[in-house]
Image (cartoon, rainbow, N blue to C red):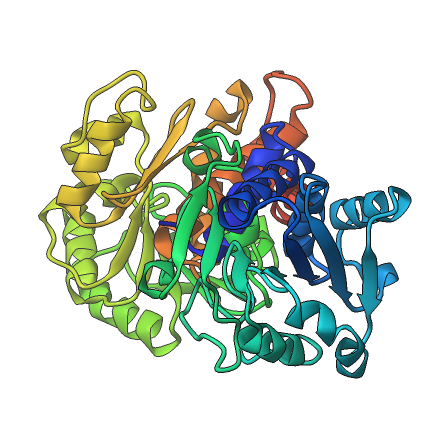
Length: 480
């Protein structure tokens, strides 16, 4: 089962793998035509009621496979407002080939074509697909009412118009389908309908769901510049928390704070004037700071990054335990802080970002190939109870039930600091996305930022230079 939002991400990932949306539309249209042929004999009257998006485009393709039928296609709206290039191409193909196609610009114009619906043996509902919620507006509302009162078999494309495949907020005036041809996998709630459901394989590779891609980025990236990231790090090391905090800013948050020992606060601040550094006494994180840090993070609804540059002093690890035992919000746990996670009972929502060696020390598999050990890492995440983003040549991201592989990146990213960037990016995405989505997209964005910097597999990449590539990886690459 797959939601409408996730299906859009998988479509985009498939395109990035070379299976273009145009190919998928052709397969979808063929599947619709096959369904019609199962419910009506050649010569039957078929009316396609199509919207201006790809749902309508799927139906335009189907018409070309129904030459043995008496088919009329009604487009709700003007043809020059068809929303996608591939849907427009398939509409133009019907026009050039002299099929019976008609534009229905408004609900009053639909009345002129109502006899077509009244006389139909089959009506194809291709007005609205997934990603639509709320009651239908005109002219779709009038069309749905006419479809529901017609004495015809109603076949809906992907989902009935007005059916919400994400949140379940179904339209009160939606289409009542007799049959639904849905693509790739069933959608939540379809099995509850009083309709025959056909799941059509349209040729999407399994790797489009398994491998991270631009669709995952589009699904997780922030809609608004909002939120705060609170990096708790620094002490023995100063560059790590500065990189994580800057990466969070490049990932779209409004403000990025660093809580660090007073002895290194000035040095961390010197890396970037955009950071807000909040110093505390002592040379390293210790238990007497834990309660104040929790209070600050929760008062401001911060996304926490815990670990960059903290070190492994006993009192620092004890402070990390105390913080996680009390904190209830979202956090990315990285570097030295990872070692305490398996032994801590916490109500926080964690994304843990270990490298191969840190994963083994946490109790996960000790392996040279994270990708080959993906099932073991998934089992480890299930036992841990948190999302794990295991960093390697191929990253493995799992919540214990769902697992993604990220292949983006270059050998030059072995340089120190790239993991700190990743932690900051994931934290920024956690502002709006769920933990698995944020971790998957973050891994891909981080990898693409490295690829953009190193045009080939060249060495010499610096983490600080990758900062400038994060916005393009997050916004431009996902839309290409």
